[in-house]
Image 1 (cartoon, rainbow, N blue to C red):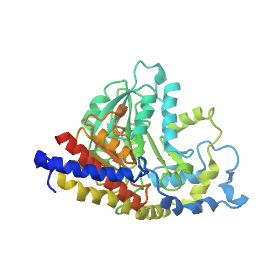
Image 2: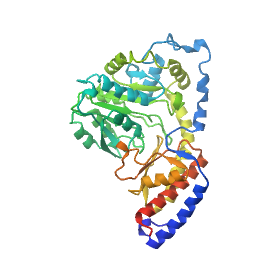
Image 3: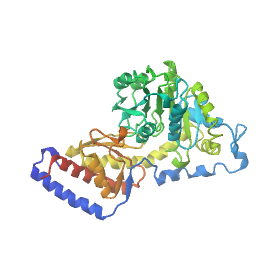
Image 4: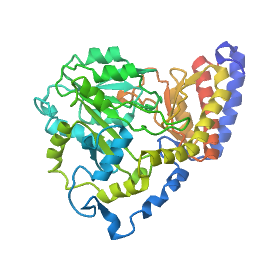
Length: 425
């Protein structure tokens, strides 16, 4: 194979016709494959099935004198706070343990900012003339949708190999209407970028014009390596505190891709002052989260060492799937010079950059062939990728055999779209 750009028109036409025949054969198979979301596969869910039986007797349901079956303990049980503090490298008193979804905690924090304001807000955000939020892109579409759902103006910040473009961030926060930034610091969604120390230091040292600026630190993949040893990360809470920004940051994590996504435990870490303020608002919202599930996770995961051992078992399932994606792209697409992609060591995604102007076409071709991908543009604010290039690949859900089939279809679609862009007539 040689690069498409140096092919003659006749060569491109012959290539296109052959690929169209192959594509029609795929369509005739009436496939139904899904690589749209980072869902753990069946094998991963089966790894943790024993969590359902760790609380077997009434006496199992006590945690430091607390009967977890009853009301109370709004911010979580003591043992869960200790476990998550160990995983995040912070202090138990800086931990609030919630329900099954960290996304819910993030949404709820932004909602409270709008209805009541945060601890340092001069007024509720709903009473501000304008609210802007910084969105490093490509990024997590659900983050952007939270901001968009409240009518914020989304400000795109370019992602670099070290994290958000910090020159752009530092310039943007001089605007008092800029109220926060979304961050996924380790194995970012979708590029798999790990923020550099310099980037993290500059984020912790920000001097925003808004007194209630919030650093939304979604540490979703904090222990989620699928290649190599666990990569330690820095405690953003202590870094912000050292810069006089103790109340600027809220960190989020969950067990969604450690145990069961639909029945996990989410956590928010923040300064003690912030947690006290949030608890004062939560008092009117709920009596407590699911403490039985919190204790179930503590008894099953036990500690950081045991949790990392479980994550190595997850990695043994995930690594071959990511290998299928990367090896197929390297073999089928690299010689053609029509796309580039990330090669992450952890997280749940491979970020593919197709030939500019073709991502929507590729996703559409895939859909018609029975393979579902995340929508083109979803990883950018308002769903608009200015280059129409980025495609997020989520390899975790399909079995390896189905993933191989889906990747074969993807390579054909990438090639067809590129040839159409270059011209085949």
